[in-house]
Structure formats: C-alpha cells, structure tokens
Length: 137
Image (cartoon, rainbow, N blue to C red; front, side, top):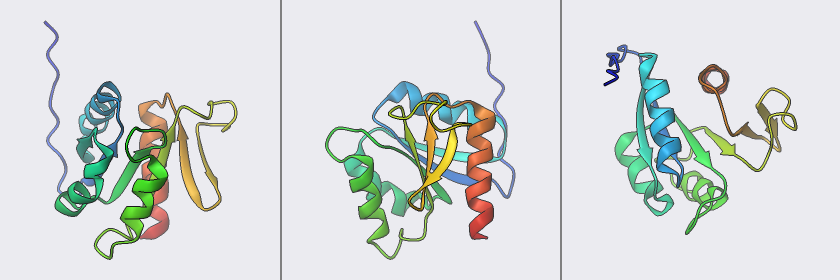
C-alpha cells in the first residue's frame, strides 16, 4: 500500500477552487497542489454549484474547465464575475481543447483570459497560479 505524506498548508497558503466535471482531474490537481504545502484546494465537479462554493470557500483563484455539462466554463465565469462577492477572483481556464504545442508552454493569455492546456503538470500549474496572482497583488 502506498502512503502519501500530507503536507500541512503554510499560514499564507493560497486558496484554490478547482471546477471540472472530471473527478479524476480534480483529485489529481488537489493532491498535487496540496502536496506542495502552498495551497488549500477545494474541488468541485458540478458547475451549477460554482457560485455557492466560491462564496463559501473564498478562493484566491479559480481553475475552471471550459467544456462541462450543465454550465460550461464561460457561463460559470460570467456568473462569478457578475456578483460582487466573487467578481475579483482571477480565473484560469483549463482546457483539453488546446494542445500543449498550440499554447506553446501550456500556459497562455488570450483576449484577457488566462488558459492552461490539459494535461497540465504540477510545475506549470503552480507557475501559472503564481503568475496570475502576482499580477493582482
């Protein structure tokens, strides 16, 4: 049996909300980010609950899938940005619709939005989060 070492989050840990309809993806992201000790992660697999969970969790940043049933990433982003409690939370869209090669290094900006190409490795993910958060603080 493999035992995973749990890292205790740092006092200044970033709060990350991951919204994706694939439980395996959200579990992987949660495990990788929390394993660094720099992040506290809330994973959500139902896009219709995004606003409710974002208000309750108070994330510093949202990682948001683009293609999901019910509400897609664009709809979720619009809902988050139209409410005063969540309008200033930065969003990184995460999509398998764009390949790593198309997006160069897997992280890019287009039309004022930040995107990550799936699959995404831990270093690229952490780098993207810190890059976006450093531009708002």
